[in-house]
Length: 219
Image (cartoon, rainbow, N blue to C red; front, side, top):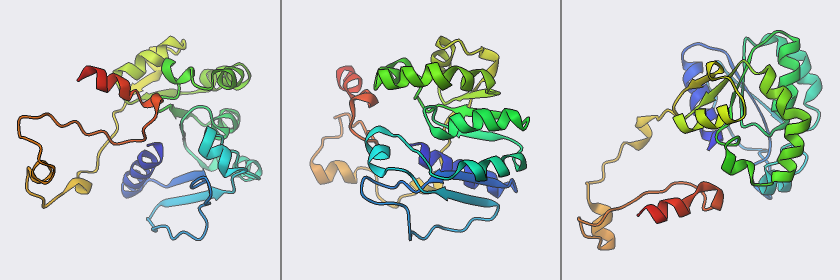
């Protein structure tokens, strides 16, 4: 998900001698906060973790509200050359859509599918209120939108976003994570699957928003 993408992107940029600051909350799971967890130290990569209002709301509704973060962000935003916001319906999107332009700093948004027509139908009332109060301002002040697929470009344009402000940047992969000494065919032999039977791998949570029913109908 976005967390993995942010980690990999930040790590690679830090390795290219860019100074990266990742701002997040301590939400970890429904019951657990990200406290007392040892995190790897990476040169040029700085992590700021703010206490989240409710882990339950974050886990159930993806509602993140980092307490007491605004004064520090207001103080430090002028140190950044650019701001990259991940996902759209967030507290940070609202805050930086105000703070960044005020300090003449461009900000970019990777919506990660949160602005496509299918996902907008989920929690429609809440998202509709958000769009009316904050959404249009966030979109209008944004310097650029990053799309992972050509379909996402179309979804951005359906919201009235100028195509010249949309950039196609496909999600990257660290191939070192996929190095395996397993012989090809081990999985099939283990579960008795004939070589002529197609295997489809899905990696992600099982939720109607992921469109698994489309995958099932296709095959």
